Image (cartoon, rainbow, N blue to C red):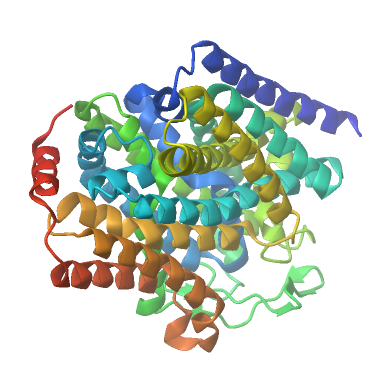
Length: 522
């Protein structure tokens, strides 16, 4: 290993040690029971709630997946995806946060999203809870695998090490501090990681912009790539077996393609996923007071705008700088290394190690949340509420830790199963969670007439259609090639509405709780 890589390793190592220390500190503050371990006793302030929500949401996708898409095909897909997510972030904070914070406490102090669904509909048989926990397990395991894949790509590129060893190393670090500190550790580390992520993105964007010669130099460098800078079009790299072809070192592009209205709507549908993202929604539930939601929303929206704008522009400017200079970014998957390559080019080794820690921050801030959510669903919602109702707090926490270990191992297996694009893996899991949970969250919070059978049917309809659409229906192409979240979200809404109208009204007790939540201030 060369001296430069040793310096980068020192920078990354300092960051990782800091994260583990935070986990130990949070553990020493005490995890007295499930509400403390899974929800930090609803103690999050505005900055902690906002930054940890956005950091856990964006994942390694923000620093690798999104710039990689922009680098490979230009503005089209990257811009509309980012815009959809930005709008979704704002609407979610403005519409859902306050009502969910109040309703989750009124609904018998629910501390997980599956438990909220179950308590909201007085589901004594815990059917909703079990289905929601199972959906969380399936799609969050895919999510965790995508983050571990990010670790593997990062370290194997840096140190020319084996993918398997690097995936296992990253997984072990995340598991250690999450096991130690629970939700408080996750929130505190996510706050630090969120600030590091946006700082790294802005710093790299500034250096890249100046190096490329400003707006004029960037435009001149990209002028030979058809539709690359067209917001209503998409560049079409000439590929053979997924690898872009070159001529005299210059990447080859086809004439490009239109990015039509249906495609734009489909891409912006990413924003719908926010209504069903447990890692974000649980931050709403953890806010100390409802009065803190407005400042939290402002912080979250600003962070989201800065981070996503920088990520897209880094991919675009990266193409202007690196085209003809790098043969390492000739596929959609390898293009996701553009952030790493530019960081190495512009910064001294020690500083580049710190900047690239932003990628680790993005991945770790998401994977820790996913692991904790799955652990809470299985330990608190399945083990305690269904199989062992008299379980002590200590038993529940041990069950959560065992579950977390199992999810970590499963995530490692997924990460090592194939070198896929992080962007595509994340999009699938995002669609599954968004379609299964998002419509039900909205109906549960804002329509008193929603019934228990409708909740079950809508959740199943959304989750199942995502799987069918992605693996079967989308293969027909044409209008069926839309992002699977859009049709699945719509179907789930329609199912909830129709089934609610044809089944018996909710009980008077449920309706009273709904009204209490609508008017409550905590």
